[in-house]
Length: 513
Image 1 (cartoon, rainbow, N blue to C red):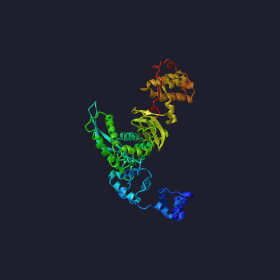
Image 2: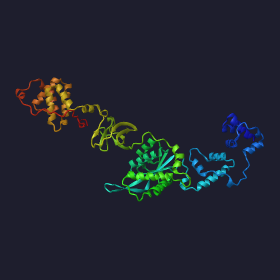
Image 3: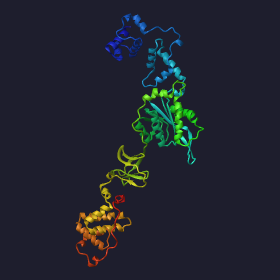
């Protein structure tokens, strides 16, 4: 009793920890913990009351004699409650036994408590023997059963796939029908399941479905990039079950059986003409399934969910996940990447490099080693480019800024003969854009020669019926523009009429590629 008195004094009066008390008195820490637990159950603190000065009375208070009541008349723990509480984080059998002792003065020992709980748990179904912590795991899979949907217009009968999701601690179940097991339907079913639960488990345990798992491996499975993107958005971890190990996802295996027996079997004689009406019928029966009391628990899945999983789930993000696919691309020589037969630009310095494209319904984002380098609105026009001017080299941007209207305006500044020659050049080509290079080249001669000389050279070229940049450049180089033209050339009439292209017609990209 002397040691017990010192333990109480040092812990309650001095405020020392159990480890410090054990070192001070030369006792094991477990012994100190046992003394303090017995004192707490007996309602003792420090200082002790005067009537407990006698060691015999203190010992009788801390170590009461065994009860003479038969064991079958003594209070029994609620084993179903014990089993549920063990699913909470950091809850142990020792803690539950202490609470049981606090609630009853005529309780059993800890060893008896553990043995009786193991006997009770051994009578449960094998799939319930695993202890799942609340909010820790969500098990997902497709059922092997299908439901038929009839197209009301064509009469075509389609088989739908049944997606099932089960929370580990409460067995709370979600099910829905989808048209396929493809990646878009797989991701959309996850998004709706998370919304149904109102939160996200810390781990999502899935089968090695091709839509979600790129490579099934016993040690290091490879998760699909879109599936990993979904997990990152909802702050969960994808943990694929080991190949050929169905017990890794036993919860959802049982959930698939229950959904088949209690939902799909009841709908077997009904005919559905749309996926929406089928899912409405499934959800109505799903409410009944989650409200049915479990035989071993005496509680329904919904009650267990509200008590265990719901408070422990991670909150949903502000916005639901937007489906996105990833594609590896190599930047072409024209600094564009091809996605769904459309071409999107990236900075021209990335030519020949491998990039990753994140493709949603509305946008296309280009990433290089995890850093976004370009973003575009998604286009459905095939074989057409979407180009951002900042992605182009400076020389290409200069060509891109030239239009019919600007060419004619610049030619008019040089002189009337230059304007006439450029109009003739544009008119003489099968497509006016084919004459842009010649026209821009002639206007560029003003940088080396004066406007007067370029206009005079254009006049000479018109008289000689020369309609090219090389002809005008040769005239300026050799100097015949400085002499007056022969009389017979002055009176020669010009053929054709000036070309008048549509106002604002742009220079197409073929000039700069």
